[in-house]
Image 1 (tube, rainbow, N blue to C red):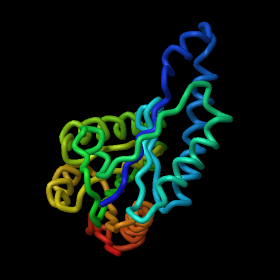
Image 2: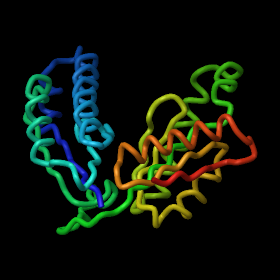
Image 3: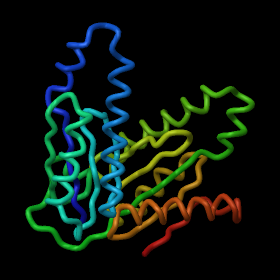
Amino acid sequence: MVYTALIELINFKSWTESLGYDREWLIQITQSEIYSLIQSITKDFGGYSLPLRYDVQISILPLNADINLFTDDLRSALMSKSPVPISINVRCGLPHEVLSNEFRAECHPRDICIAHLDLNDFTLKSSHRGLYHPYVDVLRITSELAIKLVGRAIVQYLGGDNVAVISDPKYLDSIVNEIMKYDVKLGIGISKYPRKSFELATKALSILRKGNRSLKYLVLRE
């Protein structure tokens, strides 16, 4: 089992609307700085952070993380960056469970599965078709997977041609089946530690890029 920390910016919308019309640049800077802080602190606890919609972000933490210390460190760091109060709620469960209010009262050891995919020939397509069309392809795949996998996983766009799917290993076969409908490579990492799961997924993807082009996905377990 892992912990999922919900980090909410309270009354963030009211703050943004108080800034006047020339505000979007400041909103983007503020959101990015907050995400950077959350990610920096979360990785020190063996976890990984996802920005989601930015006014609500999450950190995925291993079961052995010192939750009180994590919460104190994060709250202290965000005081200097956030223009609004911060709510941090740490719950037992994977992100798709916690975000659907399906978290559990008791925590037991449990693996987390990270599926890290990228589009085939993205750089070549960017050269031939321009930078925007391949970007739209990534957004389309991210959106379609998010809809198809709701209730089983959460899907996060990571930038470039990279997309992450975070789930329980019990859904692995069905997730792979959905992802393999697209022209992608897929690295999968499974571990009790979220940061390690991402590392293994990225390593698997790197192996695929260097190895047999006919192999479309690879699973690495700790």
